[in-house]
Image (tube, rainbow, N blue to C red; front, side, top):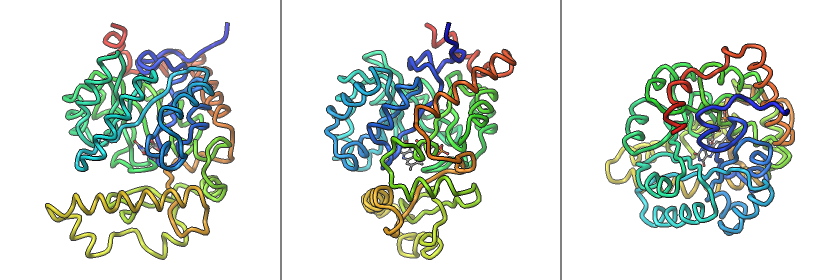
Length: 352
Ligand SMILES: Cc1cc2nc3c(=O)[nH]c(=O)nc-3n(C[C@H](O)[C@H](O)[C@H](O)COP(=O)(O)O)c2cc1C
């Protein structure tokens, strides 16, 4: 009989065999990457803006393509529930309907109030996990009815959190829902450690950019393989809030702070919404170019401190298989050492 990792509350919720998520990434989530992770037993998460505007797929067609490539294994869908722009919210509602019609049952929400997503997803028996960086946001998300929390730590790529993985687990371990570790995991040892700490799954971003299936430019993948944790800096120049990037010559030249006018507008009660929208639109183009065109474009390579554990560009499926094997080995050697502690507390609820 083939061995599998011990089930967790997360694998029971999602149907994935390996408690490993390829997190949503604008602009790096392309259909082939998402499918490769799901096909190997983890779960790939679709980023709708990336799918439509960077990888030029109609959303429904793209979802069908991924399902076909992944042999109908479970998939996830990212919904950034930013409610300050009405046209965006209307579009997100339609996209979620399409994802549900195409059979997606795992949703990762971020930013605003996830309640309306939860209502739609629960109606068809799916689950919603919300990205959080602090206990106060976790409590709000639980008020909104979410089923699990993605604990984004200070080592994460994208919008990093403020705390380390242990502190997040201590702060949120009593909330009665599965917790996912997001940030800083580049190798199998980091994955096994986080599972041993008590997380029900891990979400990785940066590791999956340096893969054969990811459509990011080779310059970007090479920069990830070469970088060390100390090369990662936080810049507010992309979106107005801190984003983790590799410190390239361009980043050194332009700095990581917003200019004085932008800073004042970002603090202004009314102007800040407009300013954030401006930043979001500009950053969509900048990140798309940097990701697809390489270093001739004076832009940004987003990456987390997980770069430390990344030594080569590999197949996404090979990564999932190696991480799975390491987890099984750790669980076989120390059956009680890597049984997630938090998981035991929420197991019954999930089983119901
Ligand atoms: C290039 C990049 C883009 C990202 N874009 C998104 C996004 O659109 N939505 C989201 O919820 N998270 C986004 N994230 C966060 C990832 O889903 C994941 O939580 C994070 O990368 C984990 O940290 P790691 O990069 O150290 O593995 C992004 C991360 C990266 C590196």
